[in-house]
Amino acid sequence: MVEWGIIIGAFAILLLFIIGAPVFVSIGLGTMLILELTENQYMLPNLGQASFEGLNAFAFLAIPLYILTGDIVSRTGVASALLDLAKSILGSIRGGLSATVLLACGFFAAISGSNASDAAVFSRLTIPELEKRGYPRAYSAALVAAGGSTAILIPPSVGYILLGYVIKLSVADLFLATILPGILVLTVMIIINFIYVNYQGFETVGEEKRFSFKEVLINLWRSKIGLLFPVIILGGIYSGVFTPTEAGAIAVAIGLIYGILTKKLNFPQYCDILRSSGIVCGVVMPIMAIAYFFGQTLTYFETQKIIMNAVLSITKNPLMIMVMIFVVLFIMGTFIDFVPNVLILGPLLLPVAVNIGMNPYHFGIWFMFTLAIGFITPPYGFNLFVVSSISGESILSVSRRVAPFVIAMIITNIIIALIPGLSLWILGGK
Image (cartoon, rainbow, N blue to C red):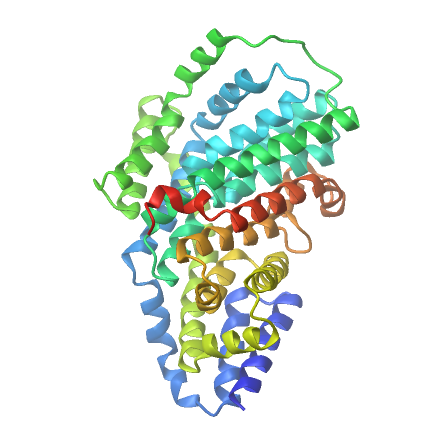
């Protein structure tokens, strides 16, 4: 009866998602249904306390701080400077403008940790110029959506903060373990983009320019503030000077001081930044609160063991189990936001992964890289909605152009899955 109660409750959550109910409402009602069907209604009074406990964690303070950092740097010209730096590095190559956008998105990802912020900033900065240089507007939007998805994969990332908390792993170590995979996904995206752009004959309009090392140095100096953020954040964390949460607070302070001293940020703008960041946090935090109670409910019923036994009854082949996990994460990432996926699926699938010999940190990186594909795949594809609203292109037209980047992310995912050392070597065998 317990198993059927959980299955019916999970189906109810998915159905509520599909019909457009708010995520926290869907999870909350599904949890209540599970408790009702399993005759455990006495747990319902714990909903308020469990939800409070779910948010009452020092690590979660980092989430609004990193979101706020991304908003601040996007308003102070830092993103433009990083774009100029990327352009001076790759702009001289045929198809270099689109590669520049991907590289600039990667630079900005090392500051913001928010895929939506990354996609929104570079949509406004680059889509008009890409269109002038011969790129279809839909492909330009797809390019930015894909580049923006790296913000959840490159440290510091809100996703790894959530994941580290729910599966009890060091956030600092997760940040460290994702450095090489983060570089890998950018590299694969740029390579496949070059192949696709040259095959399609894009970038036929615009200036011819030669690579200039002097120009790179000039732009390197101009973008020093943008490059300083990841150095301070990651350097401080890895050296043990401060925690990821404290690093977020320091990043906000540096951004504010820079904005005020350069007069790029005034009081009304700062109020607007607080408002926009607060809206994002207002969407994320209720989901985290109710998902914590849902996770407690699943733990009470030992759902992890039920899932593990169900998987092992189908196959004990580690490779096949990894394929099954990938399919589940890919489908869930396509239909549901990454926050509930991390909070719910992370604790459920970790025991299965450990049982087949995966290191928890290796699983964490691979888990996040699989979910990230959902940012650029319909019907949910959050980044697709962001770039569509800014570019004016329909979701359908952008979705048709995103295939090369989905392929790039799947290739990266396979490499990470098959080569654990890519994530683990830097941790020294943890």
